[in-house]
Length: 399
Image (cartoon, rainbow, N blue to C red):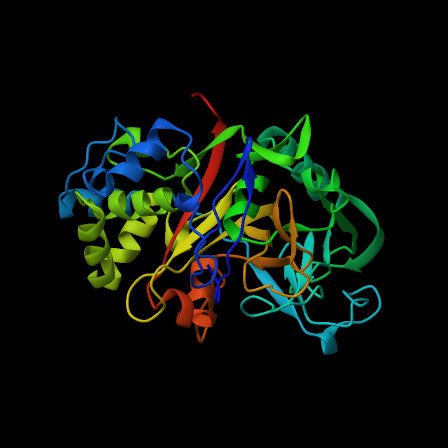
């Protein structure tokens, strides 16, 4: 949900999905897709059902005692931080990250590298370079296969040599260019493209919507979206299934984390929450700076706090993980150049890689490298000064 959106269409089943209304950024909401499950139909008929906590029948909404939440937050498992490092072009030399002619974000263990950028690029294919060690590439492909993703990753022909930044006498590592492809779009000769809208890119990456075996121009739903939470007081809430509704998953994350009965109450509580409490629920539920999706999962973000634009949000699939550094493969409706309207939906060649890490501590202060922290710093005009970030995954469809 980045920048000003455009109408988009994706064909599902035998009927095309309705054109999505123009909205800010990737605000082509997943809820705008044609409802095909009982859950989606109920949500479409009754907006109050979400506010009443009827997204999943097993969920029991209700406020949580402040003392209980603090106890859970302080007992949350500690996370081992492994952070990326920016290696400027002037610091590079033979056998130390030289070759791409640009500043790089390098995982602190030296196993992954992408071009450095603050925020998202605009209408450019220049951020499609991703290098990783052979084991990282192989592990990512295994995870994508297990997820049923439309995406594949393989070892390409290019190489990049470097060592772990800031580690004395660290051995040189050979990173291989990652060759990614969208197997669904490859069936129509567009494997180097992705779906333009971030929600459809996420659905396709998570294996929720895949092309039909007998018709590459139609998509079928194979999996359900799952909101992934950490140590909730109600363990039934750790995995919340929301069908194909990405935006519902995000709304549920905010409602559960704030212990609210409805969406409006949850939004108000989160937006006015003191920073000390927000940090506590972040640690407790694994949201915001504590959101750590694995390969085959992804980040979701919605607007929060002051500023930003109503309805803003974005979805960023995670392609690779090394330590606590994560590489995403993203697209969004702000990428307007090269957009194509195919029978299966709107696609675009200007997708991009980005790298994120956790909070990096320096003697002069903290550098928040998380997906949440970088959105606050570089994309506040879109998402506000207190956005909410959660981990989204998928599981095989049951209905």
